Length: 499
Image 1 (cartoon, rainbow, N blue to C red):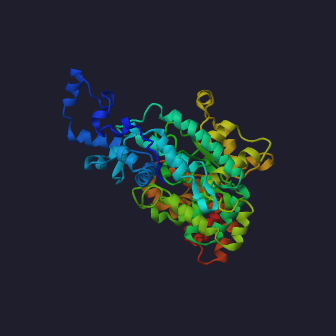
Image 2: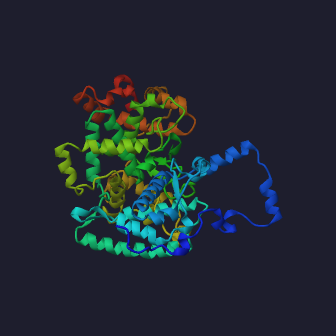
Image 3: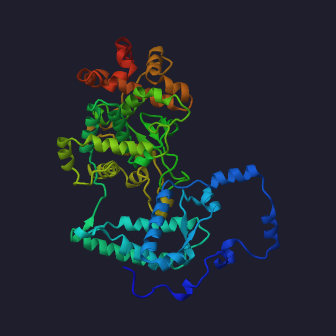
């Protein structure tokens, strides 16, 4: 219900909503003749077009920020029309079409310079408190906090800048909101939807189910899950991965390095991640999973894009496909019971692989990898001071990589080598196997360093053929493993096994 008294100060209600309200410092105005001269210079159309292309780059979350601001605008219009009339303005066609402003079809925006923290607080406490008021179930803290984030992000690209006291006042409010949510949690009145950690046991079981499914979707889940686990990443880190993000190390691992990450869109602090094959646990062997996936789907790579998991669709499509396929995989009643032994009801989510991998490497042994290596693998911040003094080290990362591969540092087999050839592609038989399994990839992306990675993949396929891959085919004559060309060449397979 609207308040009985008008909480909007008269001096705010009476302000005219136009550009004259904006200080000259924010509009670039002033009487400097040099500035006027520069402003009058006409730039070349081709230069303007290239500049617009650069300035239109944005974070993947921006459409969601706009949706959240639009939701707040609609709520204010319904419950506080006077505030809506002051705070909201209709976008011009030029503003809506300006890619640098990232409106994504939005028709209205806020006068952020007039936005007092009180109005966001009223929306959060009033409009976003209850997920189910009848059952007295509140939203968890992260839900309302994201509306605050949306205001900050959208104001950042607006000509109307937030008041100077906006952030400190909101910080105090959000601190109090956390206390309120903790009280609700203690009374079992909080909707907690965060992902529970998926430990290595459940992770291995999921990979086994994905393989036994005997479908292309299952192979996709297997390859995607092993990649996400080994890089300790988010699904959105795996989603855009291309062949250019993979290379073979000087030793016995493959190295995966992002172009950018969630908190580092410029890609200035992304670190290499050494990932190892595990010949004794093929269900969670990243070399085998990616090798089989690429060989089975090599016809998909006859295109310009080098994306491994993404199709021709937009970014995020592979992540969405994985999430849906994973949930479908555990829909079986017996499997759901097994999952509930590891995750609470409603808390099984693909993000659990990231949590589970981090938990596994730090707590499953009394001799865990260095914490800086763990933080850098997960692309977590070390803090401004430690980031100056603690740098990436390959020794720590390779140790971490072996732990993630499923090796136990307390056992003698920790340093076991992955399957590998004693010869390279100069050997005619090895090259024949490479062409059979990865010919389309080599033709399209050879010379980029991917050959060394594919050679390790081929070695894992050869090593596990008789004991793992062919038995699955024997149990299911329609299994996707049947599409791995080398498995239908017994003589070549036998010769490669001896190399």
